[in-house]
Length: 396
Image (cartoon, rainbow, N blue to C red):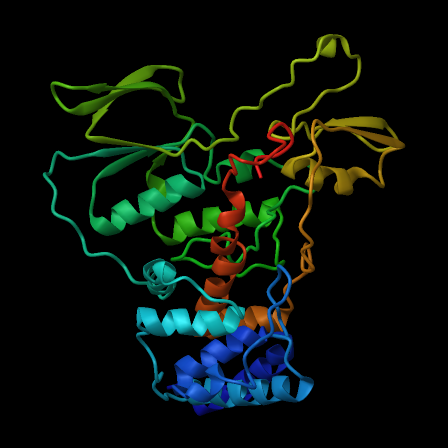
């Protein structure tokens, strides 16, 4: 139970946040906090929106006010020690809640995954496993996936060695820093289930993402055990001993062979730049840079710039430099389509940051909604259609 002297400023901060809070998420929170079916039924069922968070839920202003007022009361009751009515949601309940919140049917086969995510959001840790003392794992890379693997192995009590060819954690978010570099996935989704990020933007930029991964590595106690500036040259599996033999290049240039039972490759897919094969490219007198190996010494102001490609990186770097260059030409192989993200590069209001930080149930449910909207929901659209009449243009 919170100290009564803290309740007044807390209430004020929450009241400041609720006008900018996500109504569908507040409806989920109200059901979990109060257990009242009232919040999962008309007139509070959101209206299906376009591909966004649907902050208002499409509800009338009067109904939005009712939701915010009730949410303030429920949050304050929780803050003062009231029990959460639905602390452990069943799979059926969660699917029903999300179906209401997203205004579309959520297939029941997603239930186990959603429950798993919700438990991870709330800090659930797996039980340690029993393995032989000489069982060891090698993790190659200390970016997003490598850190997640190390944290989970540490929690399971599994002995591991982690190497990273760069001089710090962060992976691609440490090595990539071209103008406009950031995520095109909402930051609250582009986060570990077990460690949310208190993001300043809905779609954060490179430096904040890099800082996030370094903070997580420190908080989970794995940063100091990483062997930096160490590269895996080759690894092979020995059938007779059933072990992996990995040849490493150490910071001083010497080599070492490491024998482990398991190798986890977390090297990423964007660590080595792919240069286009263009005749005469090497004869160009001006600077040539790649977004994955950006040269911070290159000055673009007032220059004539050509950008080759129109994928995700181009869609970030082009708007970032367009107003600085004298001329800009983009060469594209195929057409690009950009989804409209209303909150792209917009700041997360400070009161909303407070709400996400201080009311964890709101953060968990908010992130769960995002995982459907920007992840699971689009799965079908990413499947290749073998009957598509123009495969040279698109797989759909």
